[in-house]
Image (tube, rainbow, N blue to C red; front, side, top):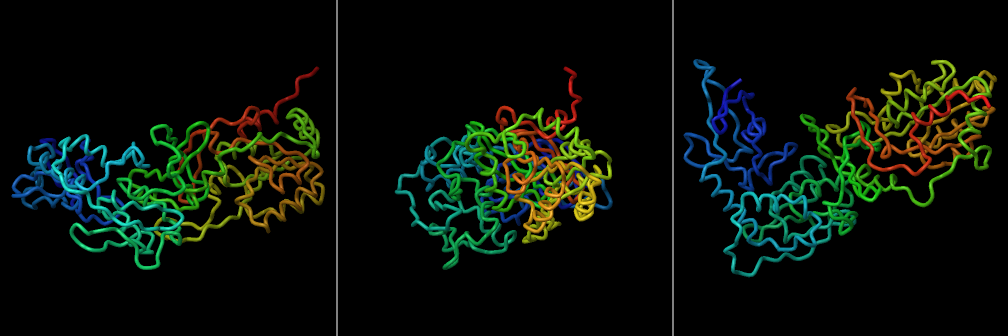
Length: 482
C-alpha cells in the first residue's frame, strides 16, 4: 500500500484511493457539492480543491487518485497533500462567491434550510460579503410532476440529480441544457419524475434547495425533527433509513447510508412515503374477545386453558419479537412462518432479492418454518392443535395466503391475532390484541444477505399498547392464586 502525507500526517491507503476519501480517513472533511460516493465523479463544483506538492495548480480531490508506490522504493511517500494552505482557502472562498452570485436569498422559506451545504460551506469557507451588483439571473418555472418540485434559481449545477437518473435509476429524465450563464437542469420534452420509482432520491442528493419533495414541502422545519436510525419494512433487504419525527409523529423517511455499503445510499419511493402508516390516527384500538371488548387477563386465561398452542409469525417483525413469540408454542415444531409479499427487482445492483419478507432468515433461525401452512391447517382440522397465536401485518400477505390463514383460524377452537391495527383477518380471530409498531420499539433483523440491522424506537406507543415481547410475557405469566 502506498504511503501519502496529508497535512504532514502519514497514511497508508490502497492504490487508486481518491484523495478526498483519504482525507476523510484522517478526520479531514473536504467540502464538496458534485461528489457523491455512488455516482461518477465529475469535478464540476471545484469546491474540493487541495494543494499537492509538486503540482503547479490546485487539484480536485474528488478525481485525483493515489498513485502506486515505486517498485524500487515501496516505503516512499508518493504524495503530499495540504488542505489548509492560503491558496486552498482563497480558492474555496472564490467558489463560494461564484455560487452565491446568482443564488436567491430565500433561506427563510427554503425547505433545505438547516441541512443546506450552501449555508454550511458559506459560513465555514465563504468571505461573508458579495461583490455582485447586477440583477440576479432568473429561470422560468418548470413542473416535474407530483413528487418533485424544482427551483432552478437555487440550483448550483452540481449535476448529482442528472447523474442519478442516468446511472442509477436509468430513466434519464433530467439533463443539462444550454451553456454559460444560461446553463440549467431540465427535463427532456414530455418527461416528468412521476414515472421514476426512485425519484425521491434526487431530493436527498441535492445539496441545496433546488429539488424538494412535494410531500414534505413547507410542512416542518428540519431543526425541530429528531432523527432515529431505523429500517425500511418495504424493501427486500430491510434498508437502513432515518426516521425523522417530532410531536410523536413521523414526518419523513430518508436513506441512512452505511459505511462501505454503496447499496444503502438510495431507497424507493414506496419505502420513502410509507412513513404515513406509522402515524396513529384516532383512539388506539382495544383488545377484544369474541367480538366484545375484553381485558388482557381474560384473553390470557382462555389461551392458557385451551390446550396445545401453535404460533404463526410473519417475517416482517424483529428477531426479539420472533424469539418471544416462539415461546408461546407448546413445542418448537409448532412455530410456523407466514408472509409472501414480493418486490419487483428494478435495480439489481441495489436489490439482491425479490422477497419482501425481509426478516425471513431471522425467523427461520429461531425455529419458524415457512411454506408449511398447509401442514398446520391439516393438524388443526385433525384436532391436534387447540389454539393459534397469529402475528400479522396485512400489508405483507397476499389474498391467497390470507384465505389460507382464514381457514386455519376458522378451524381452530381458539385463535388470537396480534396486529398493530385490526385487519379483516384479525377480526376473524377469536381474540385480538393490539401491539406496538416497529416505530414504537427497539429490535433488529437479519436480512436475506445475513446482515444484522438494528432499529430504534422513535414514537411512544399509546397507553396500554405493549411490544410483542412484553405482551408474550403477560400472556405466559402464571396466574396468581386468589
